[in-house]
Amino acid sequence: QVRLVESGGGLVQAGADLSLSCTFSGSTFSDHDMAWFRQSPGKERVFVAAIGWSDSNTYYTDSVKDRFTISRDNAKNTMYLRMNSLKPEDTAVYYCAAKWVGSTLHASTSMYTYWGQGTQVTVSS
Picture 1 (tube, rainbow, N blue to C red):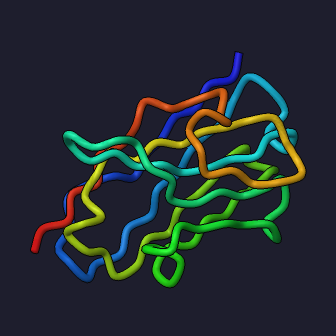
Picture 2 (cartoon, helix red, strand yellow; picture 1 turned 60 degrees about the vertical axis):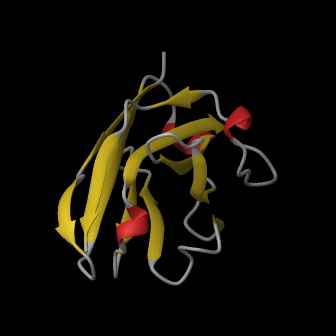
């Protein structure tokens, strides 16, 4: 059974940087595409970024592509999200998600099989 555990969230001021981690267990990490989603209070969970089995294949939502960097270390079974120049609108619970590796990276929550419990990121103005 795949288990995902996020860490690294917290309270920061606007303009600060923060890094999130997602630790994967229960299967072969490199056999899975990974992604970050986020959910603000009262809103739907939305796509942030995805990464294929290698670092060379990544996909971002437009609002973060110049500020966030998704990466993975297959030797450590861990995915990362480096968030720079954070804005108050980045405030959300951030979730990592996993799916069996495919030919295309996906932004839809319905495509992902496994989910972590989430980590809160709060950006104050």
